Image 1: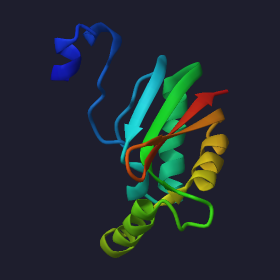
Image 2: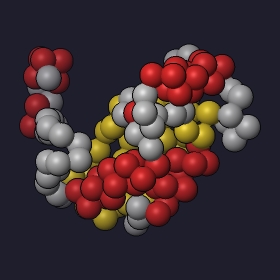
Image 3: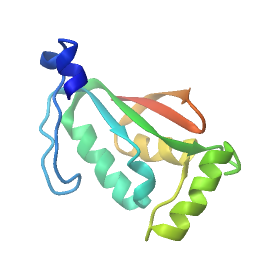
Image 4: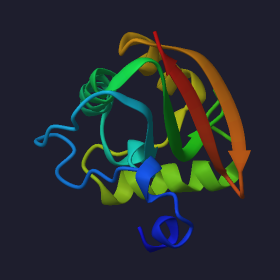
Length: 131
């Protein structure tokens, strides 16, 4: 918040704090960013979250999802593969998701036009557009 305030962009951003599953996100947003959350939850919980995000976006709005994504063989990038083991050991339902698994969930929540971006070591972004 301090960074965006210091760079005079505060009027262009709205931070929504609260419980992801209990609190209302509001609506009419053109972009939603979710960072390092996907791996904590199981597919059913993520689907619920993606539906909430879809409902908060206007048509054509963008959902930017930052996380550690695996290839379809679930073997690379190695940071994401090792992180999958961490999720298995230390969470009830968390896991590292493949790009395909994630995009399938996003499609079911009303998203299309997926773009993938590699960011740093092992991390990536999926950008999706609300139908």
